[in-house]
Image (cartoon, rainbow, N blue to C red; front, side, top):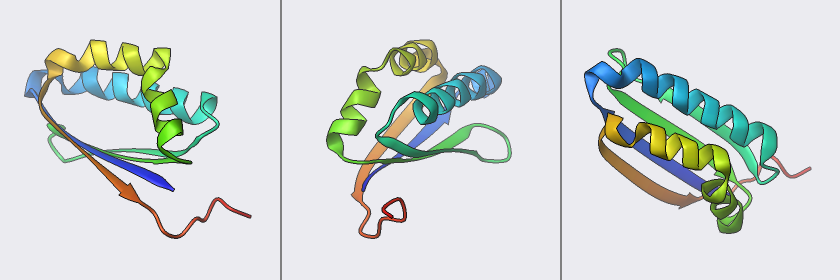
Amino acid sequence: MYIVAVQFELHPETTEGFKDAVLKNAAASEQTEPGCHQFDVCFNADGTQCFLYEVYDDEAAFGAHRASAHFKIFAETTQSMVINKRLEIYERLNNPYKH
């Protein structure tokens, strides 16, 4: 499994707009991307830190996510809301999605 972990630091006045945009992106990813198995959206107490935990089949599935219309809308919409973004890639050794 291909794991994507993203942490965003947000401008405080943009947190509600960012929450709306990221939740739409997460829902569209889980509903329309066959290679996306999980897309968790987490926020700290004041809403200025967002953490995403995404699970994909492989790097190609993540590439398809980044090429999707909903991701491009999310990226464009939220660009000015973000102070800092950190993306990390992991390999998940156990696969609970395999039956």
